[in-house]
Image (cartoon, rainbow, N blue to C red):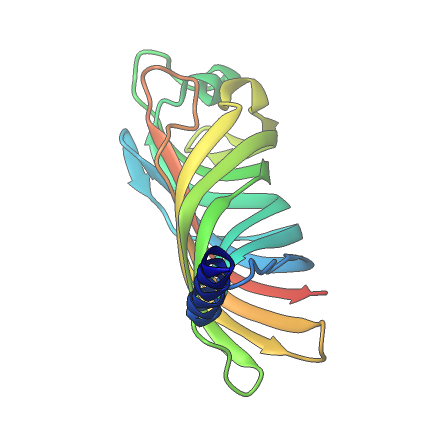
Length: 229
């Protein structure tokens, strides 16, 4: 009888202690969001063997997605077709000069170039978001831009030639890497739909030309618009 009483007392005590232990929070699935994006861009080119010669407009469009792994944090990516244009003045770009039949091969020639390069872009970024307030929240974004060449053309003007839409894909590297820094806001339209607007700086840090004697890097500033569904 004493043993049974002892077991009952211990059982009640154990139940009482267990009941006082706070319940562990359930794991929450924050989900995946998919949307459409379109961005006018302002691009420019920097060349070690020349100088930047102004900006050029471009455009980017495609899909975007956020993998939300915490209430205020997302892994953000996209799949876009992005045109990165830019202007520069460069001395003796090898392929362009080979097409300039009037140029003196022994005398350096400066060419005004316009790059028209199109990529398939796959950014990998982290997005940090504020707490939603009245259907709106703001974010900052940081990560890596991965761009894969689709096409590359170039206009070239010198004192002896004017060349338009010269195909330079064979002289442009297939892969381009860049650093992405951006920010913006997200605004609810309905329960499951929101509008996104922001600004992104894409800083290319790899040489885009295959010419071993040249180092050219392209960059752009994008005005981002999108809709998450």
